[in-house]
Length: 144
Ligand SMILES: CC(C)(COP(=O)(O)OP(=O)(O)OC[C@H]1O[C@@H](n2cnc3c(N)ncnc32)[C@H](O)[C@@H]1OP(=O)(O)O)[C@@H](O)C(=O)NCCC(=O)NCCS
Image (cartoon, rainbow, N blue to C red; front, side, top):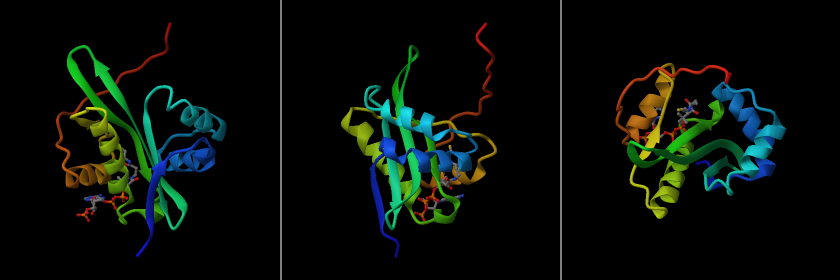
């Protein structure tokens, strides 16, 4: 049995966060990861590290999503577990940590957007009780 631990993410975790972000498909420098983690507390956001046998193998980040047209929800902005450490319950424990964090702050809804290509993640979220609400396209462009 592996020893799984969940703890807040620290700026010193940046090199491993950057590595794991690559598994999620994002190229992030260690410096940028470090600056983003350091800014979490001021923005009242939540991020946790998942460790197996003391090695950081996963991270999750969640933040308030505040829109005019609906009550605030807690949005999972990123979640990844190293391929070699999947299926051990780390992802579930990371979601549990942001769930508890949100409940303490009065949130009642946990929300996540997941690319249509991430079918593994969709099965995972459904096992955890998430319900598929809708399918959207996202659009972006440079600021002119
Ligand atoms: C999605 C992800 C975070 C899951 O992490 P994990 O640590 O492997 O998941 P867990 O071991 O905690 O699984 C929790 C439960 O979900 C189930 N589950 C996990 N992956 C699943 C899948 N692909 N299909 C169906 N169920 C799945 C597990 O069987 C487990 O259920 P159980 O408690 O009944 O056994 C991980 O696969 C991952 O990092 N994927 C790549 C990145 C990604 O897609 N991130 C999400 C972006 S939105």
